[in-house]
Each structure stands twice: as C-alpha cells, then as structure tokens.
Length: 335
Ligand SMILES: [Zn+2]
Image (cartoon, rainbow, N blue to C red; front, side):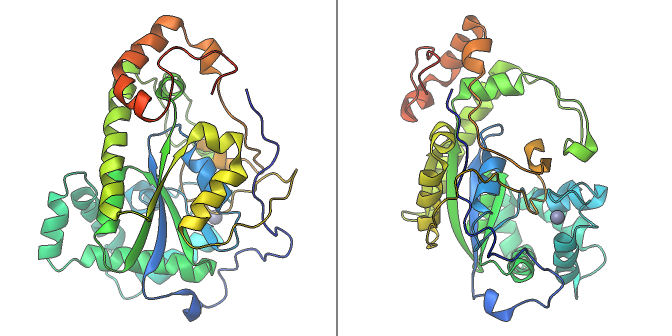
C-alpha cells in the first residue's frame, strides 16, 4: 500500500481565502466559462481530486454541482466548509446572484430541466434547444456566478455522471474539459458493498445500503464506456484519463497533467501540508474532514474474498484490460 504524505498545495499562505462578500469581479468572467468536469464512477477518488485541484489558486473546487438544485439547496445540506449550504458564505452569494431576475421557482425549474437534459442519449437536450435553451442560459449564469464569487477562472464540477457533462458540452457559453477518472472495479465494488450509516453533519445525507457486486460491476462498465463517448464528443486536447491508483501514488504528477490541460501552470508542491477542503457543495463524506492527506485505499486486495474478486473480474474483464489492470487478482505490492 502506498502512502503519500502530501499533495500539490500551492502558495497556501500568500493565496487569500475566497471572499464572496466583495462584488463579483468582471475581469474574472470571460466570454466562456471554463469548466473542468470530473467524470467516472463513485468511490474512485473524484471528490479527493476535486479538493486537490481546488488547492490551486486559479481553481474553484465546486464539488458535485449537479446536486445543488437536485437536493442540496432544498435540504440545506452541508458544504465542505462545515456550514450548511444556505449559511455558506460562498454558495449563499452564488445562489443570490443566480436567482437575480429569475422567478421564485428557479431551483425547481432547473432541477426538472436537469432531469430532462442530463442523460446519456440526449433526447431531452434536443427538446430543450427547441424551446430556446433557457436551461443552458441558467447553467452558464450559475457557473459564471461561481467564477465571479470565487474569483477563480476554472470551475471544477465533480458530478461524475457523463450525462451532465454531455449537456454542458452542448452549451455555447461553456468551455468544457473532462477528466475521466478510473479505479480498479474490484476496489470500487468492494467499497460500495459496505453500508454507511446516515450522518448528515458528516456529509452522508442518507443511509447507503450495500450494492451487490454484479450491480456495481455492470454499472461501472456502462458509466466508463459512456465517459469514453463523452471524451470523444469534447474532442482531442480537451480530456485526460486518470487512474485513481496513479493519482494517489503521485498526486503532483497527476495534478500537473490536469492543470496543463486547462492552461494553468502547475506550481511546486509543499511537502507535509494536508489539504483543506473549501466549498465542495456535495461529494463523498471525506470532504467534511478539516484536513485531508491523500492515501491509497487498497484494502480490498487483502479483505475481499477471492471468489468475489473473480466474479467482478469476470464481469468487467474487457475494460479491465483496456485500463491497464491485471485480470489476475493482484498481490498486495501491485497497483
Ligand atoms: Zn462553503
């Protein structure tokens, strides 16, 4: 098991914290909003990557922004800063900007439009364009408010599912980049095979029941294939594939690849500095920790019964090979 003491933590002291109380900065809102979308399956380190990227002074780690209108705002769920989202000094101001000039039903309307448009097949997106695409205008307005209130030109959206990114890719006001995060499906399936109790203030909004291994294995394959389709849609030079195992083994190298993709200069890492989650609006429960050190989670290699490992291997074999994972059950020193 590898263990990484520190990650890219650029200029933590000189970099001022996000101050949303100041007026939005017009210079921070270019013609198109630069969105870095983290796509992939759950339990693959997507929230961890969001937090790590948010350490860069040009990047706002927004968390799973798709959930803001779906349930986070309505339920007043917790932001990574520790405040509920309606009390969070950043998201409160972002939503105030977003609501300006909109009907009181904005959030419900937006949620319904998300259900129509953020799908793989995209039929809802075609219908939405035919209606004049108010949803695109509202999405750009929301993301522009995120840029303005954070004064950071790159917004990370780690909503994971490729359907939302396909919708974003079709919006003219958005310059979309995609990070396709892949993790060994045996680690994913083992992690999701365990129950997690509801702990609202710890970022777990509802009890998470164990997912059957076959269910996870098949969905993992579908989501990753759909993400590959997404990467083809955004085109060359707009996406990068990251393996979870490589990210946790060498965070600065992975972050440098991603930052280069969006045109930002990687800055030197500061050894020994844990990450401090900022305002990830939703994501894994790890975002509620006050300080995070990146460490790989390879417990499945010793804890997962051999037969179950082979079952997941069998169901995911074609993509396992494609993403460079050994079909044989890896020994502890492999990754
Ligand atoms: Zn917050």
